[in-house]
Length: 273
Image (tube, rainbow, N blue to C red; front, side, top):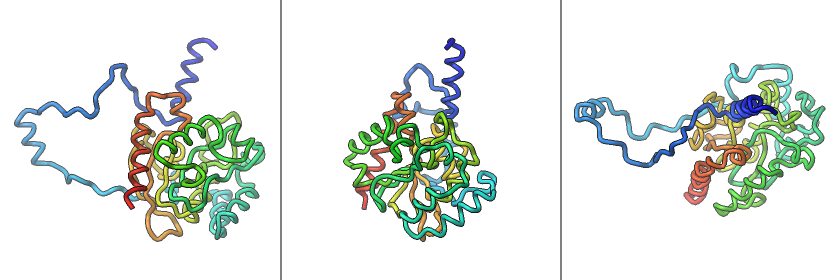
Protein backbone atom coordinates (compact mmCIF):
# COMPACT_ATOMS: atom_id res chain seq x y z
CA UNK A 1 0.00 0.00 0.00
CA UNK A 2 1.42 3.40 -0.98
CA UNK A 3 1.81 6.08 1.74
CA UNK A 4 -1.21 8.11 0.56
CA UNK A 5 -3.41 5.04 0.73
CA UNK A 6 -2.14 4.28 4.23
CA UNK A 7 -2.95 7.83 5.33
CA UNK A 8 -6.44 7.60 3.80
CA UNK A 9 -7.09 4.29 5.56
CA UNK A 10 -5.93 5.79 8.88
CA UNK A 11 -8.17 8.83 8.46
CA UNK A 12 -11.14 6.63 7.66
CA UNK A 13 -10.46 4.61 10.78
CA UNK A 14 -10.25 7.81 12.87
CA UNK A 15 -13.62 8.97 11.54
CA UNK A 16 -15.17 5.56 12.26
CA UNK A 17 -13.95 5.78 15.87
CA UNK A 18 -15.45 9.25 16.28
CA UNK A 19 -12.16 11.15 16.48
CA UNK A 20 -12.69 14.72 15.35
CA UNK A 21 -9.93 16.61 17.14
CA UNK A 22 -6.29 17.11 16.20
CA UNK A 23 -3.76 16.61 18.98
CA UNK A 24 -0.49 18.53 18.85
CA UNK A 25 2.98 17.05 19.19
CA UNK A 26 3.81 19.13 22.28
CA UNK A 27 2.37 17.74 25.55
CA UNK A 28 0.21 20.07 27.64
CA UNK A 29 -0.35 19.96 31.37
CA UNK A 30 -4.15 20.04 31.59
CA UNK A 31 -3.99 20.13 35.39
CA UNK A 32 -1.77 23.20 35.66
CA UNK A 33 -3.35 26.34 37.09
CA UNK A 34 -4.31 28.85 34.37
CA UNK A 35 -2.25 32.06 34.13
CA UNK A 36 -3.73 35.06 36.00
CA UNK A 37 -6.03 37.25 33.91
CA UNK A 38 -5.92 41.04 33.79
CA UNK A 39 -7.94 42.67 36.59
CA UNK A 40 -10.55 44.13 34.22
CA UNK A 41 -11.13 40.81 32.50
CA UNK A 42 -11.39 38.97 35.84
CA UNK A 43 -13.96 41.47 37.14
CA UNK A 44 -16.07 41.06 34.01
CA UNK A 45 -15.95 37.29 34.35
CA UNK A 46 -17.18 37.46 37.94
CA UNK A 47 -20.10 39.62 36.88
CA UNK A 48 -21.38 36.97 34.44
CA UNK A 49 -20.28 33.85 36.31
CA UNK A 50 -22.44 30.75 35.81
CA UNK A 51 -23.54 28.41 38.63
CA UNK A 52 -20.72 26.23 39.94
CA UNK A 53 -22.38 22.83 39.36
CA UNK A 54 -24.78 22.62 36.42
CA UNK A 55 -27.14 19.64 36.62
CA UNK A 56 -26.18 16.50 34.76
CA UNK A 57 -28.17 16.19 31.52
CA UNK A 58 -30.92 13.58 31.36
CA UNK A 59 -31.13 11.78 28.03
CA UNK A 60 -34.45 10.39 26.90
CA UNK A 61 -34.73 6.94 25.38
CA UNK A 62 -35.38 5.77 22.76
CA UNK A 63 -33.33 8.24 20.80
CA UNK A 64 -35.03 11.01 18.78
CA UNK A 65 -36.87 10.11 15.58
CA UNK A 66 -34.43 12.21 13.57
CA UNK A 67 -31.71 9.77 14.62
CA UNK A 68 -33.81 6.63 14.70
CA UNK A 69 -35.95 6.37 11.54
CA UNK A 70 -39.12 4.39 12.05
CA UNK A 71 -39.24 1.44 9.67
CA UNK A 72 -41.03 -1.90 9.71
CA UNK A 73 -37.88 -3.53 11.12
CA UNK A 74 -37.59 -0.96 13.89
CA UNK A 75 -41.28 -1.18 14.75
CA UNK A 76 -41.01 -4.98 14.86
CA UNK A 77 -37.92 -4.80 17.06
CA UNK A 78 -39.67 -2.48 19.49
CA UNK A 79 -42.72 -4.72 19.72
CA UNK A 80 -40.65 -7.88 20.20
CA UNK A 81 -38.37 -6.24 22.76
CA UNK A 82 -41.34 -5.11 24.85
CA UNK A 83 -42.69 -8.67 24.89
CA UNK A 84 -39.58 -10.03 26.63
CA UNK A 85 -39.91 -10.26 30.42
CA UNK A 86 -36.51 -11.86 31.08
CA UNK A 87 -33.05 -11.63 29.54
CA UNK A 88 -33.32 -15.29 28.51
CA UNK A 89 -36.50 -14.54 26.57
CA UNK A 90 -34.90 -11.49 25.00
CA UNK A 91 -31.84 -13.49 23.90
CA UNK A 92 -34.07 -16.04 22.15
CA UNK A 93 -36.03 -13.24 20.46
CA UNK A 94 -32.82 -11.60 19.21
CA UNK A 95 -31.48 -14.91 17.87
CA UNK A 96 -34.66 -15.37 15.82
CA UNK A 97 -35.00 -11.73 14.70
CA UNK A 98 -34.73 -11.35 10.91
CA UNK A 99 -35.08 -7.56 10.73
CA UNK A 100 -31.33 -6.96 10.50
CA UNK A 101 -29.56 -8.17 7.35
CA UNK A 102 -26.34 -8.81 9.27
CA UNK A 103 -27.91 -11.95 10.72
CA UNK A 104 -27.67 -13.57 7.28
CA UNK A 105 -23.91 -13.07 6.96
CA UNK A 106 -22.87 -13.70 10.57
CA UNK A 107 -21.84 -17.07 11.96
CA UNK A 108 -23.41 -16.54 15.38
CA UNK A 109 -25.64 -14.11 17.21
CA UNK A 110 -23.63 -12.40 19.94
CA UNK A 111 -26.00 -11.41 22.72
CA UNK A 112 -24.15 -10.87 26.01
CA UNK A 113 -21.63 -12.22 28.50
CA UNK A 114 -21.03 -11.92 32.21
CA UNK A 115 -23.57 -11.90 35.01
CA UNK A 116 -27.13 -10.70 34.39
CA UNK A 117 -28.15 -7.99 36.86
CA UNK A 118 -24.49 -7.20 37.61
CA UNK A 119 -23.87 -3.64 38.87
CA UNK A 120 -22.03 -2.59 35.70
CA UNK A 121 -23.46 -2.95 32.19
CA UNK A 122 -20.87 -2.42 29.44
CA UNK A 123 -22.05 -1.71 25.88
CA UNK A 124 -19.65 -1.78 22.94
CA UNK A 125 -20.09 -1.43 19.18
CA UNK A 126 -20.33 -4.76 17.35
CA UNK A 127 -18.86 -8.28 17.32
CA UNK A 128 -15.58 -8.83 15.53
CA UNK A 129 -14.25 -12.02 13.94
CA UNK A 130 -13.41 -13.69 17.28
CA UNK A 131 -16.78 -12.76 18.78
CA UNK A 132 -18.62 -13.99 15.70
CA UNK A 133 -16.82 -17.32 15.94
CA UNK A 134 -17.31 -17.82 19.70
CA UNK A 135 -20.72 -16.17 20.09
CA UNK A 136 -19.72 -13.91 22.99
CA UNK A 137 -18.82 -10.19 23.07
CA UNK A 138 -15.32 -8.86 23.77
CA UNK A 139 -13.33 -12.09 23.52
CA UNK A 140 -10.64 -10.89 21.10
CA UNK A 141 -7.71 -8.56 21.78
CA UNK A 142 -9.96 -5.67 22.76
CA UNK A 143 -11.83 -7.96 25.15
CA UNK A 144 -8.57 -9.07 26.74
CA UNK A 145 -7.64 -5.44 27.28
CA UNK A 146 -11.07 -4.76 28.78
CA UNK A 147 -10.58 -7.66 31.19
CA UNK A 148 -7.24 -6.21 32.32
CA UNK A 149 -8.77 -2.76 32.77
CA UNK A 150 -11.57 -4.22 34.89
CA UNK A 151 -9.11 -6.25 36.95
CA UNK A 152 -7.07 -3.09 37.60
CA UNK A 153 -10.02 -1.62 39.53
CA UNK A 154 -10.85 -4.87 41.30
CA UNK A 155 -13.65 -6.08 39.02
CA UNK A 156 -14.12 -9.48 37.46
CA UNK A 157 -15.79 -9.76 34.07
CA UNK A 158 -17.96 -12.73 35.01
CA UNK A 159 -18.83 -11.60 38.52
CA UNK A 160 -19.25 -7.83 38.33
CA UNK A 161 -20.28 -6.98 34.76
CA UNK A 162 -22.78 -7.75 32.05
CA UNK A 163 -21.42 -7.04 28.57
CA UNK A 164 -23.17 -6.54 25.24
CA UNK A 165 -22.92 -4.54 22.00
CA UNK A 166 -25.08 -2.17 19.99
CA UNK A 167 -25.16 -4.82 17.22
CA UNK A 168 -25.67 -8.53 17.82
CA UNK A 169 -24.10 -9.64 14.54
CA UNK A 170 -20.73 -8.92 12.98
CA UNK A 171 -20.69 -6.41 10.11
CA UNK A 172 -18.76 -7.89 7.15
CA UNK A 173 -15.11 -6.91 7.32
CA UNK A 174 -15.68 -5.28 10.72
CA UNK A 175 -16.96 -2.18 8.95
CA UNK A 176 -18.73 0.61 10.80
CA UNK A 177 -22.43 -0.17 11.49
CA UNK A 178 -24.98 1.61 9.34
CA UNK A 179 -27.77 3.75 10.80
CA UNK A 180 -30.37 1.17 9.74
CA UNK A 181 -28.48 -1.65 11.47
CA UNK A 182 -28.18 0.35 14.67
CA UNK A 183 -31.84 1.36 14.54
CA UNK A 184 -32.97 -2.26 14.14
CA UNK A 185 -30.93 -3.45 17.14
CA UNK A 186 -31.31 -0.51 19.51
CA UNK A 187 -34.74 -1.49 20.94
CA UNK A 188 -33.21 -4.76 22.12
CA UNK A 189 -30.27 -2.93 23.69
CA UNK A 190 -32.61 -0.62 25.58
CA UNK A 191 -34.56 -3.65 26.77
CA UNK A 192 -31.33 -5.25 28.01
CA UNK A 193 -30.79 -2.16 30.17
CA UNK A 194 -34.35 -2.30 31.49
CA UNK A 195 -34.23 -6.03 32.29
CA UNK A 196 -30.70 -6.17 33.72
CA UNK A 197 -31.23 -3.07 35.91
CA UNK A 198 -27.56 -2.20 36.43
CA UNK A 199 -26.40 0.48 38.83
CA UNK A 200 -24.89 2.24 35.84
CA UNK A 201 -23.98 1.76 32.18
CA UNK A 202 -20.58 2.22 30.51
CA UNK A 203 -20.71 3.10 26.80
CA UNK A 204 -17.50 2.13 24.99
CA UNK A 205 -16.78 4.13 21.83
CA UNK A 206 -18.51 6.63 19.60
CA UNK A 207 -21.02 4.24 18.02
CA UNK A 208 -22.44 3.06 21.35
CA UNK A 209 -22.47 6.60 22.72
CA UNK A 210 -24.27 8.17 19.76
CA UNK A 211 -26.77 5.30 19.50
CA UNK A 212 -27.81 5.19 23.15
CA UNK A 213 -27.57 8.89 23.99
CA UNK A 214 -28.49 10.33 20.60
CA UNK A 215 -25.44 12.62 20.74
CA UNK A 216 -23.45 13.50 17.62
CA UNK A 217 -20.29 14.92 19.19
CA UNK A 218 -17.15 12.83 18.76
CA UNK A 219 -16.14 10.45 21.55
CA UNK A 220 -13.09 12.62 22.31
CA UNK A 221 -15.50 15.35 23.42
CA UNK A 222 -17.96 13.13 25.27
CA UNK A 223 -15.50 10.75 26.92
CA UNK A 224 -15.47 10.82 30.71
CA UNK A 225 -18.86 12.52 31.04
CA UNK A 226 -21.83 11.23 33.01
CA UNK A 227 -25.39 11.35 31.70
CA UNK A 228 -28.72 10.25 33.16
CA UNK A 229 -30.55 7.99 30.72
CA UNK A 230 -34.33 7.58 30.95
CA UNK A 231 -35.10 3.97 29.99
CA UNK A 232 -38.61 2.66 29.26
CA UNK A 233 -39.56 0.18 31.97
CA UNK A 234 -37.40 1.74 34.70
CA UNK A 235 -38.69 4.17 37.32
CA UNK A 236 -35.46 6.12 37.62
CA UNK A 237 -32.88 7.26 35.02
CA UNK A 238 -29.71 5.18 34.79
CA UNK A 239 -26.32 6.91 35.21
CA UNK A 240 -24.26 6.45 32.04
CA UNK A 241 -20.50 6.99 31.62
CA UNK A 242 -18.87 7.35 28.20
CA UNK A 243 -15.34 6.13 27.48
CA UNK A 244 -13.09 4.95 24.66
CA UNK A 245 -13.53 1.54 23.08
CA UNK A 246 -10.67 -0.85 23.96
CA UNK A 247 -9.95 -1.41 20.25
CA UNK A 248 -9.25 2.32 19.94
CA UNK A 249 -6.83 2.11 22.87
CA UNK A 250 -4.97 -0.75 21.19
CA UNK A 251 -4.32 1.53 18.20
CA UNK A 252 -3.84 4.72 20.25
CA UNK A 253 -2.14 3.68 23.52
CA UNK A 254 -1.44 7.31 24.37
CA UNK A 255 -5.12 7.65 25.31
CA UNK A 256 -5.01 4.90 27.92
CA UNK A 257 -4.44 7.42 30.74
CA UNK A 258 -7.80 9.02 29.93
CA UNK A 259 -9.58 5.68 30.04
CA UNK A 260 -7.81 4.90 33.30
CA UNK A 261 -9.42 8.01 34.81
CA UNK A 262 -12.78 6.80 33.51
CA UNK A 263 -12.33 3.40 35.14
CA UNK A 264 -11.35 5.06 38.41
CA UNK A 265 -14.69 6.86 38.15
CA UNK A 266 -16.36 3.46 37.83
CA UNK A 267 -14.54 2.22 40.90
CA UNK A 268 -15.49 5.32 42.86
CA UNK A 269 -19.13 4.97 41.80
CA UNK A 270 -19.25 1.38 43.00
CA UNK A 271 -17.67 2.24 46.35
CA UNK A 272 -19.97 5.22 46.95
CA UNK A 273 -22.96 3.04 47.92
